[in-house]
Image 1: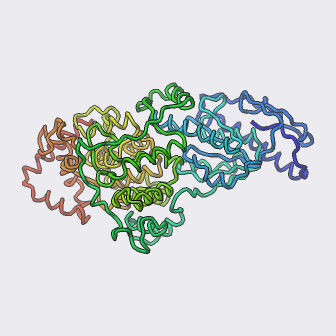
Image 2: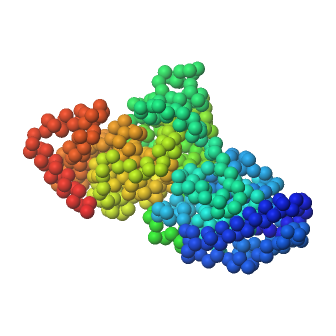
Image 3: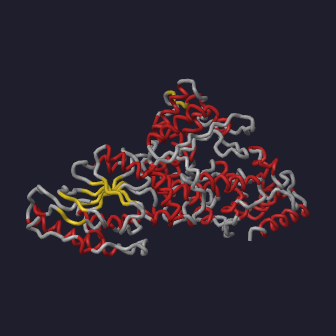
Length: 584
């Protein structure tokens, strides 16, 4: 860590006084940050480093760093401290592109606060810390000077704020440079840094997305309904993906109607590539087990890619082996087949190991070369430049406050089986089991199994949001929260989704083979052996008819319920109450 400067350019006395004042404020901020988010960690004695007087800048050849155990000889002055977060593992990151390798220094930190603000899946924590360490090595190989603070380093304060303050006190930069945070919670941390640190903090836009946030706000302004489909078409035009002039390739914008085949167990299911943990990953896994062993999820076997090259290899394998059938079977579910034809690359996209536009271009090229059908290419690209970009825009348009929306006034606690998988419902058991094993479930399992059950049962959407955020390796609040609150739980009253995604067991039976092995009968509407989704579905219609009856896509189901005989309505209410009583 750099203090001991040689050959420092001569500066004016006024400039020196200004810098010294900022450093004194930074040291004070570092002392004040000791307890932030990590009171269990001991802060190093500030007496370990002597602060030089204004006249001895050229004599500071060796000064102890506030980072315990590190001493640096002959280090160069630091112009800017460049903070790179764990979801910013991209060489194209705006802060890195704006920085100067010769004068600036990169800071990366593993902090307990980020692993525990919700109790993240052990495999998710290990994936991110290992990917961060590998990215630091990638940057070093590219000529960057890196300060990397590991979770178990002495003096680690456990928070971004504490670690930036320590680094500023140690490195004494002129300013801090960072790319905007992906989550509101972290962005709010940045707000107070300039005053607390006593030096400028420059926050740059995140240019790794297809749609800049100002463009999304402009698109959304004045619209009565912010439907993804219309935004998606704008993104197709903006990028030129799957376009023939100003028309969509094949004549249709969306081939979702062709993507609803039920998979058969005898189909060949290509598994995603397995990446054997290297020494860095093994060290991280041991650390995670020691520090977060009581968190949800299986740590082993660990099979994720943690380098850019391996993430690219995983994506290439998907395009070659699974993408041709992805379109047909993207909504299917099969017992014992957690991945089917899905890419399983969202965690790589969301932390920066893969570039969203680059993967879309590659899929488009595969279609143009005749290697994949149009419905597969379009379905994949829609998920990236459609849903992914759209939910990010919704998130930043509505925060803060979006996470607390609860249009349907659902307050029931999250059932224990979302953690244990101890339920007789085969579809829910399968989804939670594979979530525990892989920190992964595909979008239909999240939306139409765990999500739909929570919607029908009246689960508190905030509790469900925290569950989704914690258990999936690809989950970051900007992408998970709108999908949960808006799409899955209709808690925003229809801002995002055009209707509640409520369904009975018939949908799961049509799209999976779970019902064939389930202890419940999917054909029964009521009674102790009826699929719980069935009475809960009709009870949901009855309870919320006042809020959903005017929705054109739900009105028919309300009319159907109204035609039931009174005794059938009573049986529905009784069966639903029996299911809900078991959740208590």
